Amino acid sequence: MSSQAVRLVVLVSGSGTNLQALLDAVADETYGARIVAVGADRAGIEGLARAERAGIPIFVEKLTDHPTREDWDRELAARIAEHKPDLVVCAGFMKILGTPTLSSFPVLNTHPALLPSFPGAHGVRDALSYGVRITGCTVMLADAGVDTGPIIAQASVPVLDGDDEETLHQRIKGVERSLLVETVGRMAREGWTVTGRTVRLGRSG
Image 1 (cartoon, rainbow, N blue to C red):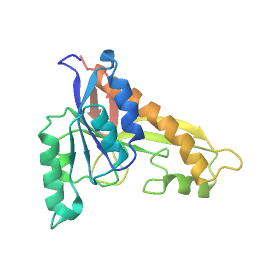
Image 2 (image 1 turned 135 degrees about the horizontal axis):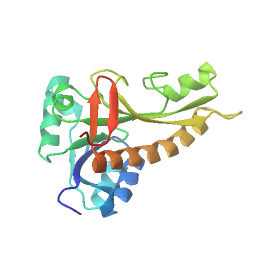
Image 3 (image 1 turned 60 degrees about the vertical axis):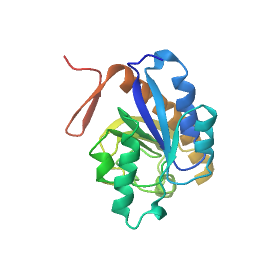
């Protein structure tokens, strides 16, 4: 892998299927990025096992190991910083990141709906309850809000007759993995700029 490859720290909280998609992608040297560490907010999860099998350094920072949320925020940012990432990717990370991380690194996150519609923890359920015929997924730069950061990429997923939350979410997850891999790769190879809420891929000038 080229030394110029963009350095990724990936954060996970569960099975790590998005992480696995990124691990598969970075195996191709032309992808433009490499995963330098995988972090989690809990131990014993498959996401960490995937990283270990791939020979990637891991770290765990549990919220319950700290007296306050602010202490956890600071320590998580410090653990991430040890690996000198160019980009932090939340791949199913189920904690909201605090200012220490968000102010230090660009952070990528995904959401299983077409933002700004249906933000929050129940995006799939909320879209289904509302009766939309098309939903999808969003890749964004994280900010201090809940799913309010500047949008980088989106993909649509039709809602089929007979869909329930599980069947719809599974189809969205497949599209989300592909969109995340495509977006991270383009950011790594082409760079990006942010103007207000507009993110453009590609180096200016």
